[in-house]
Length: 346
Ligand code: F6P
Image (tube, rainbow, N blue to C red; front, side, top):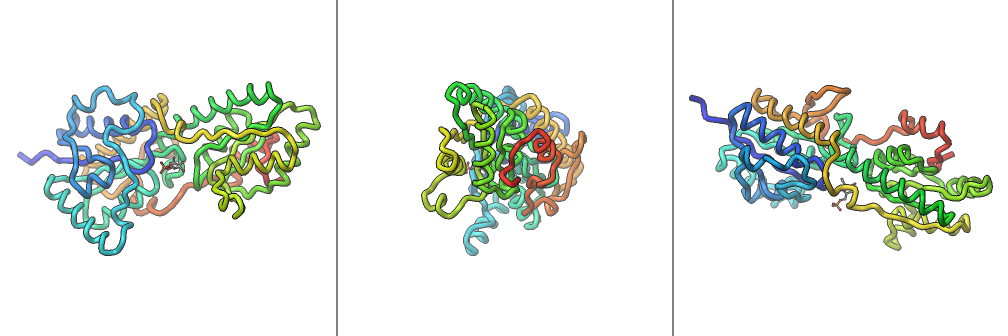
């Protein structure tokens, strides 16, 4: 009888809601449906390098569907990005881990950086399957990444709450949401919560235009305004030199240019914490089960992806090193503009 396949699962990069649902999806399907054995590496690629792992079973994967974070821990370890000599050493350690633990495949659950590392790992000859996650929704090749819907819910609820306090005090409220290179979260939460100004990294913004827009609103009798800012918007050198976040800087400049009372709120890590939404549980589970299917078929070097309503897969080399940013003429941008949202460019 052929030996059961053995897989190693890791979660890497910033955490997000839905990671446990994905671990459960791939792990349970591998064990139950395909008769495989599964282990989980501790703290992302650190565990793959050191070999630190836990055995996974149907029992240990039970009860984690709704849990935030990751039962395996995560890190931003990039074993192929270290100093030249170090890279060689870590690569040897990884390949030794894979051999020692008799792994047929490593499942890498993560965002852009993780898919890049996963691709590099597959180029060493290892069998790898990737599963995309991120609250930023910026993994290239998948329409959605799990974690995004949960973060969107947190950001939208927070901005909804800021409306009432902004109104009470007749203030401008600036809210900074996550999104370093891509503005999906700011754009969507801004749209969902009726933000008046939305600033995203993909659209160059002009502070004078933003100030004029906000002053006009005040003159027209609007008692308050909501400004949604992605953390990764371009900032002047002065802001960076003062170590100011995007939200802090935008609030300061709006206050100085308009004379209107302005406050800022930085949502930060609240956006990544807590239980995944039902949509994220479903997406993470679908992607996880599809990853197990790829492994069963021996179809390696791929990332599972959502395209339209279907789960499919794409070569890791196609997504590695790419970022799915917001096209400045995206339907959500055009729709927001029709409603009068200011993107700081017109
Ligand atoms: O990639 C997800 C993300 O939450 C980004 O939105 C944010 O810029 C970054 O991670 C924060 O990273 P860290 O957890 O390393 O502070």
